[in-house]
Length: 321
Image (cartoon, rainbow, N blue to C red; front, side, top):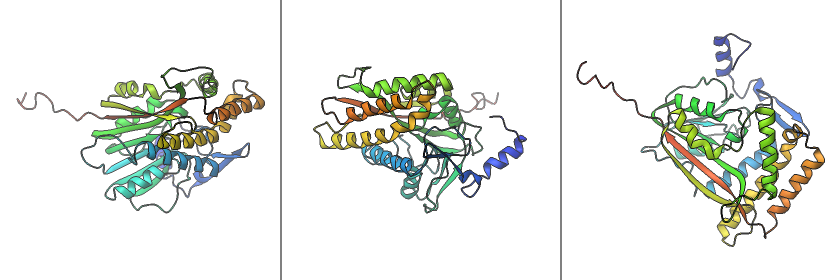
């Protein structure tokens, strides 16, 4: 993106950003705390409530994936890893613990990561929707629960493939929040889907972006140049209505997580004329749905991964032409 500084000064400024700089400052609005660096770029707060929600999400995702941190079929453990929109950094920290020979960097707009981390894990304050200043030889780039808040997920994916080494892998994990009934159909009258309709309208009207985008990630990755693209999906109940204890546990955690997200939508819904009173009604309907065991519906957790093609040798090299 454009900068008021010269390019070299700008890159030096961004590269040197650390948790000790002014990027550690925060903004407050409506009783919630938000990032100050690149103000407004990410709509969710970064305060203690949000950090607890992120921790809940990490626990839920690890449960869904049977404690696997990634699903990409890498032949060897990755040694150089980047975690995009790392948040409180739990994924990066666990990767550092599991792979002590690897070097992991987590990048986020907010400096909310712990300071006591494995020695092979570092964090950087930066905007992944801007021009990247990181190296271009990563083995693995990971992103989780971020694309729905970005102005241009395709741009981020294009940056990812540029910064992978040939043969390196990219993986994106994210919930698709539209609620599907048990037969896979979508009822627009389900409260969560009414909420999503408002959010989709607000995102398109105020920012010109499309949500949800996660079902389309495979095609976006293909256009960016990835190969061996695969998708895995996992259905997670809204609410604790399933009889299976594992599904019930996951549904309960998902619903708590969603309840914590809902009130953060006031500002974006207000941008399309939804009053605070109307927003509260939307949220309350969703919460009642989570606790209504007669409503059986699911969110879907997506895992997309793909590989940057290996470099091919010049076809004339072998013949000397």
